[in-house]
Image (cartoon, rainbow, N blue to C red):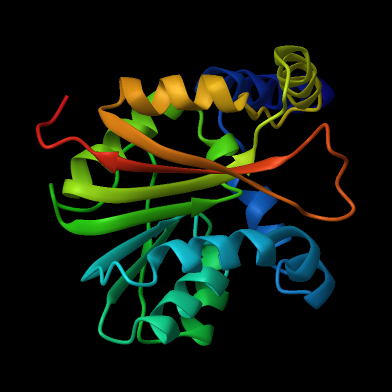
Amino acid sequence: MIGRQLGRKLAAMAERAERRGPDRWLFDLWSRFYDAPWVQRLTYRPEHDAVLRRLRGRSPRRVLDLGCGTGQLASRIRDTLPDCDVVGVDFSRGMLARAARRAPAVHWVQGNALQLPLRDASCDAAVSTEAFHWFPDPLAALRELHRVLVPNGWMLVALVNPPFEVFSHVAAETSTWIGEPFDWPTSERMRRRVEAAGFRVEAQQRILRWPLPLLLPTVLTVARRSEKPT
């Protein structure tokens, strides 16, 4: 019995290591605390405010929120741009269940960032806040965003961008060791990835979030899709 249980556990660990992505249960559990006011105020609200400031005045007809969580940002986009069609995509059922209760007018879709359940050139803008570091293949995810955006469509991605590669390396090694690997690239490496996926980077804006240390700044990368696919 013990041998079989150990074998199943090792097999599960091997499968997780092979796909290099986080377990869905982690986010289903996190969805229970995600909407706590102090979590939103300290972690997500500053990024959401920065994204909304960028979207105002652009009048997008359809916006994708990738890694939408419980729908805080997607619902705010819908309220700020009432004529805009908003689609929230997340792979956690727990997150999406809470999102659907929050904003029924938003289209909530369970999906994988590496295989988005959306048609080519179907969105005018795509946003992602504090989710991109979990994607097991960042370049593939960026290419998927490139695919679903219209030519010259906007992409806004916010996540921690350490100032030095050594901090990125330590974060990657530590997260892999605890079994939930993620990737925090430097802003320069993020820029290269975005450009390699066929985008033109317009700006990289640092977002201050107290009490996070300055060594782990959040950066909003703003880019536009090239007119032709990569």
